[in-house]
Length: 265
Image 1 (cartoon, rainbow, N blue to C red):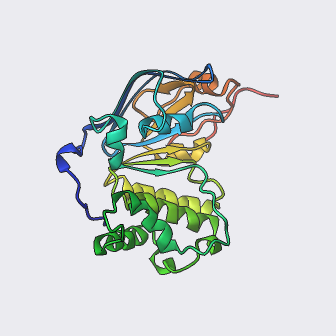
Image 2: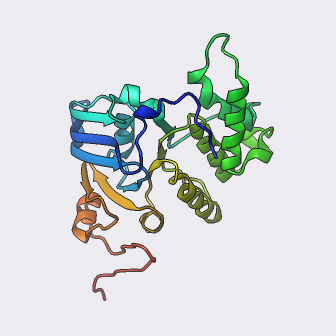
Image 3: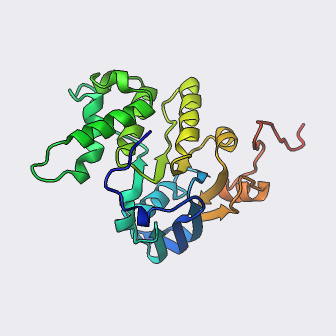
Protein backbone atom coordinates (compact mmCIF):
# COMPACT_ATOMS: atom_id res chain seq x y z
CA UNK A 1 0.00 0.00 0.00
CA UNK A 2 1.41 3.37 -1.01
CA UNK A 3 1.35 6.06 1.68
CA UNK A 4 0.48 9.63 0.73
CA UNK A 5 3.37 12.07 1.04
CA UNK A 6 2.71 15.78 1.28
CA UNK A 7 -0.50 15.69 -0.78
CA UNK A 8 -3.15 18.35 -0.42
CA UNK A 9 -6.18 16.13 0.00
CA UNK A 10 -8.52 19.03 -0.71
CA UNK A 11 -7.50 18.84 -4.36
CA UNK A 12 -7.74 15.06 -4.65
CA UNK A 13 -11.13 13.66 -5.76
CA UNK A 14 -13.21 11.21 -3.80
CA UNK A 15 -15.03 8.16 -5.13
CA UNK A 16 -17.07 9.40 -8.09
CA UNK A 17 -15.66 12.88 -8.59
CA UNK A 18 -14.29 13.96 -11.94
CA UNK A 19 -10.50 13.87 -12.27
CA UNK A 20 -10.14 14.92 -15.93
CA UNK A 21 -12.38 16.92 -18.23
CA UNK A 22 -11.76 17.77 -21.88
CA UNK A 23 -14.24 20.03 -23.63
CA UNK A 24 -14.17 20.70 -27.39
CA UNK A 25 -10.42 19.99 -27.54
CA UNK A 26 -8.66 20.42 -30.88
CA UNK A 27 -4.96 19.91 -31.54
CA UNK A 28 -3.20 20.94 -34.74
CA UNK A 29 0.40 20.01 -35.54
CA UNK A 30 2.12 21.44 -38.61
CA UNK A 31 -1.26 22.44 -39.96
CA UNK A 32 -2.69 18.92 -39.56
CA UNK A 33 -5.63 18.13 -37.27
CA UNK A 34 -4.47 15.52 -34.73
CA UNK A 35 -7.42 15.75 -32.31
CA UNK A 36 -10.84 17.00 -33.37
CA UNK A 37 -13.59 18.14 -31.03
CA UNK A 38 -12.63 15.73 -28.23
CA UNK A 39 -14.90 15.63 -25.19
CA UNK A 40 -14.02 13.33 -22.30
CA UNK A 41 -14.77 12.96 -18.60
CA UNK A 42 -12.73 10.62 -16.40
CA UNK A 43 -13.94 9.83 -12.91
CA UNK A 44 -12.06 8.63 -9.85
CA UNK A 45 -11.40 4.85 -10.05
CA UNK A 46 -12.33 4.63 -13.73
CA UNK A 47 -10.31 2.06 -15.69
CA UNK A 48 -10.54 3.47 -19.20
CA UNK A 49 -9.08 1.68 -22.21
CA UNK A 50 -8.41 3.75 -25.33
CA UNK A 51 -8.03 1.89 -28.62
CA UNK A 52 -7.35 3.12 -32.12
CA UNK A 53 -4.90 2.91 -35.03
CA UNK A 54 -1.34 4.18 -35.07
CA UNK A 55 -1.26 7.92 -35.64
CA UNK A 56 -4.80 8.31 -34.34
CA UNK A 57 -3.83 10.77 -31.60
CA UNK A 58 -3.79 8.47 -28.56
CA UNK A 59 -0.38 9.54 -27.24
CA UNK A 60 -1.23 13.16 -28.06
CA UNK A 61 -4.33 12.87 -25.91
CA UNK A 62 -2.26 11.71 -22.92
CA UNK A 63 0.18 14.56 -23.44
CA UNK A 64 -2.71 17.04 -23.49
CA UNK A 65 -3.84 15.67 -20.11
CA UNK A 66 -0.27 16.03 -18.83
CA UNK A 67 -0.02 19.61 -20.05
CA UNK A 68 2.85 18.70 -22.40
CA UNK A 69 0.79 19.73 -25.45
CA UNK A 70 -1.44 22.80 -25.43
CA UNK A 71 -4.66 22.41 -27.43
CA UNK A 72 -5.29 24.73 -30.33
CA UNK A 73 -8.67 25.32 -28.75
CA UNK A 74 -10.85 23.83 -26.06
CA UNK A 75 -10.62 23.47 -22.28
CA UNK A 76 -8.75 20.89 -20.20
CA UNK A 77 -8.83 20.49 -16.43
CA UNK A 78 -7.01 17.88 -14.33
CA UNK A 79 -8.31 17.58 -10.77
CA UNK A 80 -10.07 20.89 -11.36
CA UNK A 81 -6.76 22.59 -12.21
CA UNK A 82 -4.90 23.52 -15.40
CA UNK A 83 -2.97 20.43 -16.58
CA UNK A 84 0.40 22.00 -15.71
CA UNK A 85 -0.71 22.17 -12.08
CA UNK A 86 -2.89 19.06 -11.89
CA UNK A 87 -0.23 16.73 -13.28
CA UNK A 88 1.45 16.52 -9.88
CA UNK A 89 -1.27 13.96 -9.13
CA UNK A 90 -0.64 12.03 -12.37
CA UNK A 91 1.70 9.09 -12.96
CA UNK A 92 2.81 8.44 -16.54
CA UNK A 93 4.35 5.38 -18.18
CA UNK A 94 5.36 6.39 -21.74
CA UNK A 95 5.15 4.12 -24.74
CA UNK A 96 8.90 3.62 -25.11
CA UNK A 97 11.37 3.85 -22.24
CA UNK A 98 14.61 3.92 -24.18
CA UNK A 99 17.92 3.42 -22.42
CA UNK A 100 21.31 1.86 -23.05
CA UNK A 101 20.90 -1.69 -21.81
CA UNK A 102 24.44 -1.85 -20.37
CA UNK A 103 24.11 1.45 -18.49
CA UNK A 104 24.97 0.66 -14.85
CA UNK A 105 21.78 1.82 -13.16
CA UNK A 106 19.89 -0.30 -10.69
CA UNK A 107 16.17 -0.96 -10.47
CA UNK A 108 15.99 1.14 -7.29
CA UNK A 109 17.80 4.04 -8.96
CA UNK A 110 15.31 3.99 -11.84
CA UNK A 111 12.33 4.03 -9.48
CA UNK A 112 13.81 6.86 -7.40
CA UNK A 113 14.00 8.99 -10.56
CA UNK A 114 10.26 9.39 -10.18
CA UNK A 115 10.92 11.38 -6.98
CA UNK A 116 13.34 13.85 -8.58
CA UNK A 117 10.68 16.52 -9.06
CA UNK A 118 9.99 16.53 -5.32
CA UNK A 119 13.57 16.83 -4.11
CA UNK A 120 14.54 19.92 -2.16
CA UNK A 121 18.01 21.30 -1.42
CA UNK A 122 20.47 19.66 -0.89
CA UNK A 123 18.79 17.50 -3.57
CA UNK A 124 19.29 14.19 -1.82
CA UNK A 125 16.83 11.38 -1.44
CA UNK A 126 15.28 11.36 2.01
CA UNK A 127 14.16 8.42 4.13
CA UNK A 128 10.63 9.17 2.92
CA UNK A 129 11.74 8.95 -0.73
CA UNK A 130 13.41 5.60 -0.05
CA UNK A 131 10.39 4.25 1.82
CA UNK A 132 8.01 5.22 -0.98
CA UNK A 133 10.32 3.66 -3.59
CA UNK A 134 10.45 0.40 -1.63
CA UNK A 135 6.65 0.42 -1.29
CA UNK A 136 6.22 0.98 -5.03
CA UNK A 137 8.58 -1.89 -5.85
CA UNK A 138 6.70 -4.11 -3.42
CA UNK A 139 3.41 -3.15 -5.08
CA UNK A 140 4.68 -4.30 -8.49
CA UNK A 141 6.39 -7.35 -6.92
CA UNK A 142 9.89 -6.25 -7.91
CA UNK A 143 11.42 -5.44 -4.52
CA UNK A 144 13.72 -8.47 -4.62
CA UNK A 145 15.26 -7.06 -7.82
CA UNK A 146 15.99 -3.61 -6.38
CA UNK A 147 19.78 -3.97 -6.78
CA UNK A 148 19.61 -5.63 -10.21
CA UNK A 149 20.82 -3.71 -13.25
CA UNK A 150 17.72 -2.57 -15.16
CA UNK A 151 19.08 -3.74 -18.51
CA UNK A 152 19.40 -7.32 -17.25
CA UNK A 153 15.66 -7.69 -16.67
CA UNK A 154 13.09 -9.09 -19.08
CA UNK A 155 10.78 -6.75 -20.95
CA UNK A 156 7.89 -7.50 -18.59
CA UNK A 157 10.05 -6.98 -15.51
CA UNK A 158 11.31 -3.66 -16.88
CA UNK A 159 7.72 -2.56 -17.46
CA UNK A 160 6.90 -3.31 -13.84
CA UNK A 161 9.84 -1.13 -12.80
CA UNK A 162 8.64 1.73 -15.00
CA UNK A 163 5.19 1.42 -13.44
CA UNK A 164 6.82 1.60 -10.00
CA UNK A 165 8.65 4.75 -11.14
CA UNK A 166 5.25 6.28 -11.95
CA UNK A 167 3.76 5.11 -8.65
CA UNK A 168 6.35 6.89 -6.50
CA UNK A 169 4.72 10.17 -7.51
CA UNK A 170 1.74 8.76 -5.55
CA UNK A 171 -0.71 9.48 -8.35
CA UNK A 172 -4.48 9.63 -8.28
CA UNK A 173 -4.46 9.09 -12.05
CA UNK A 174 -2.18 6.65 -13.89
CA UNK A 175 -1.63 7.04 -17.64
CA UNK A 176 -0.26 3.98 -19.45
CA UNK A 177 0.79 4.25 -23.11
CA UNK A 178 0.97 0.76 -24.66
CA UNK A 179 2.22 -0.91 -21.45
CA UNK A 180 1.96 -4.40 -22.97
CA UNK A 181 4.45 -3.81 -25.78
CA UNK A 182 7.26 -6.41 -25.74
CA UNK A 183 5.57 -8.26 -22.84
CA UNK A 184 4.70 -11.95 -23.08
CA UNK A 185 1.14 -13.19 -22.55
CA UNK A 186 1.67 -14.45 -18.99
CA UNK A 187 3.24 -11.16 -17.89
CA UNK A 188 0.40 -9.28 -19.61
CA UNK A 189 -2.11 -11.18 -17.52
CA UNK A 190 -0.14 -10.37 -14.36
CA UNK A 191 0.07 -6.68 -15.29
CA UNK A 192 -3.68 -6.50 -15.88
CA UNK A 193 -4.22 -8.09 -12.47
CA UNK A 194 -1.90 -5.44 -11.01
CA UNK A 195 -3.98 -2.70 -12.64
CA UNK A 196 -7.11 -4.27 -11.17
CA UNK A 197 -5.61 -3.70 -7.72
CA UNK A 198 -4.30 -0.22 -8.51
CA UNK A 199 -7.68 1.03 -9.69
CA UNK A 200 -8.89 0.72 -6.10
CA UNK A 201 -6.57 3.64 -5.31
CA UNK A 202 -6.63 5.66 -8.54
CA UNK A 203 -8.13 6.17 -11.98
CA UNK A 204 -6.30 4.45 -14.84
CA UNK A 205 -6.17 5.28 -18.55
CA UNK A 206 -4.60 2.57 -20.69
CA UNK A 207 -3.79 2.80 -24.39
CA UNK A 208 -3.69 -0.49 -26.25
CA UNK A 209 -4.08 -2.14 -29.65
CA UNK A 210 -5.32 -5.37 -28.06
CA UNK A 211 -9.08 -4.91 -28.28
CA UNK A 212 -9.89 -8.36 -26.92
CA UNK A 213 -7.71 -8.09 -23.77
CA UNK A 214 -8.73 -4.52 -23.06
CA UNK A 215 -12.43 -5.38 -23.29
CA UNK A 216 -11.99 -8.02 -20.60
CA UNK A 217 -10.19 -5.94 -17.99
CA UNK A 218 -11.20 -2.30 -18.33
CA UNK A 219 -14.48 -0.86 -17.13
CA UNK A 220 -14.87 1.66 -19.95
CA UNK A 221 -13.62 1.87 -23.55
CA UNK A 222 -13.09 4.77 -25.93
CA UNK A 223 -12.13 4.64 -29.62
CA UNK A 224 -9.85 7.37 -30.92
CA UNK A 225 -8.82 8.22 -34.45
CA UNK A 226 -8.63 12.00 -34.37
CA UNK A 227 -12.26 11.95 -33.16
CA UNK A 228 -13.18 10.27 -29.89
CA UNK A 229 -16.05 7.79 -29.63
CA UNK A 230 -16.94 7.37 -25.98
CA UNK A 231 -20.20 6.64 -24.14
CA UNK A 232 -18.97 6.16 -20.55
CA UNK A 233 -19.33 2.36 -20.90
CA UNK A 234 -17.39 -0.55 -22.42
CA UNK A 235 -19.95 -1.00 -25.17
CA UNK A 236 -18.79 -0.06 -28.68
CA UNK A 237 -20.80 -0.43 -31.86
CA UNK A 238 -19.40 -1.98 -35.03
CA UNK A 239 -20.00 1.34 -36.77
CA UNK A 240 -17.82 3.18 -34.23
CA UNK A 241 -15.02 0.64 -34.61
CA UNK A 242 -15.17 0.88 -38.39
CA UNK A 243 -15.13 4.69 -38.20
CA UNK A 244 -12.12 4.47 -35.91
CA UNK A 245 -10.10 1.97 -37.93
CA UNK A 246 -11.41 3.08 -41.35
CA UNK A 247 -11.96 -0.52 -42.43
CA UNK A 248 -14.50 -3.35 -41.98
CA UNK A 249 -14.40 -4.98 -38.54
CA UNK A 250 -14.77 -8.75 -38.25
CA UNK A 251 -13.91 -9.54 -34.63
CA UNK A 252 -15.30 -7.81 -31.57
CA UNK A 253 -14.74 -8.94 -27.97
CA UNK A 254 -16.43 -7.70 -24.82
CA UNK A 255 -16.44 -9.29 -21.39
CA UNK A 256 -16.00 -13.03 -21.93
CA UNK A 257 -14.02 -13.24 -25.21
CA UNK A 258 -16.09 -14.21 -28.19
CA UNK A 259 -16.08 -13.69 -31.93
CA UNK A 260 -18.61 -11.86 -34.03
CA UNK A 261 -17.99 -12.63 -37.70
CA UNK A 262 -19.78 -11.31 -40.74
CA UNK A 263 -21.12 -13.71 -43.31
CA UNK A 264 -18.28 -15.01 -45.46
CA UNK A 265 -17.62 -17.74 -47.96
